[in-house]
Amino acid sequence: GACWPAIGTIARELRLSRSTVLRALNDLYRAGFLEKQNRHRPNGSLTSNLFTIK
Image (cartoon, rainbow, N blue to C red; front, top):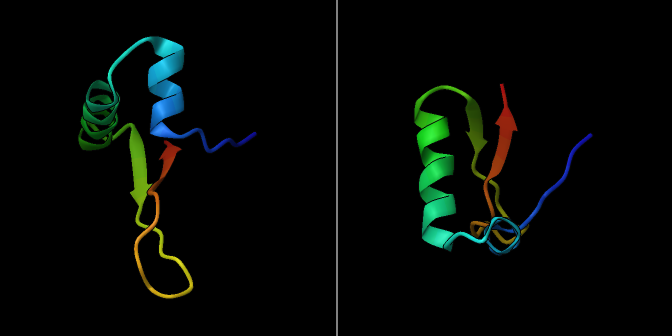
């Protein structure tokens, strides 16, 4: 399955700050546990990143 929870949703459910969630995601990415894909809107502007567990 797949899901796309917002950073705010993850933070709220885990009772953590948004910055803690972002730091954890980036730590997992740098450690090689996640793949990160930058995503773009049709007009070319950036939207949320897509993280995939390896």
